[in-house]
Image: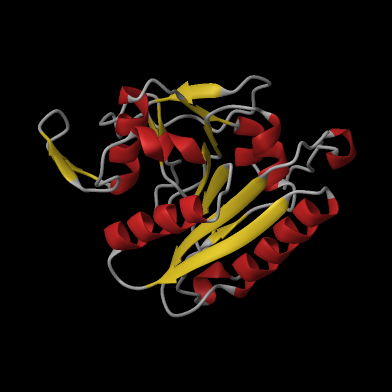
Length: 217
């Protein structure tokens, strides 16, 4: 794994509040719980007031609606969406905030083969996801999965409800998930979703694997 070059001591924090929003089921992966602990710890050490909010239920659209509402009710300036199967470095929140962008996210590998990312320069062009190529500048995209996405909280006040929904798109002849549709609504509100390609190299997407003797070298 590429070693992070981010130095949190160089990040000058202004007073603010962050809400980390996590839709989950009945349990958390231990690796996610550990990374979440480290993120909150480093945030606290750097003076960033951080609150973790989880919603454990089965209807994702309702979960995200409630989490966004709860995040706004805390008075948070920024909302960091994290899925409960994502492992990210302790510096994640600080690095995303340091960009000072309305919406900035990290790309990650989907949990199936062939291995592809979840960020797309064009929504619906599923055969051409954003390459995993670290770049110094942020990369604008039309859509990205919400496993690790930072947003200015006030954006939700500029988008009509429901914020999250599924929708059919004739262009690609399939349904769009709530993450891609939110990205479209963000664009309609005048904002651009951007990807931190360096941080993207450090994320891991937890899943299952059938272990067998074929894996023995």
